[in-house]
Length: 91
Image 1 (cartoon, rainbow, N blue to C red):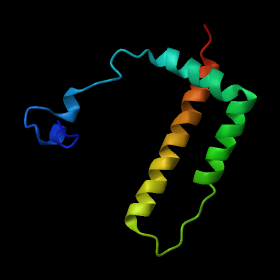
Image 2: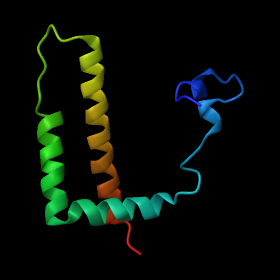
Image 3: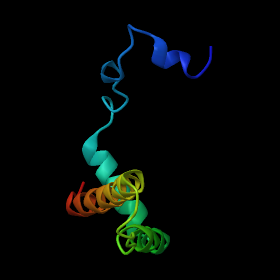
């Protein structure tokens, strides 16, 4: 079966697959807090901030590049949000 055969199936819908259904949000938030509150985690997060939020694209940049960059920013913002929530949630 080729990778693209999955997308050709008429009975399978991406909405039917929920890989996150068994994850505990509080547990994930606490894991993000532990990971990104360490010195190495802070270094990694500062690097991600630098390559996403401080990067400015030229006015003639393509829509695809703008969307790609916005997706990167959304992921880094999610990391910040989950880390913040995890630090506030105590066991």
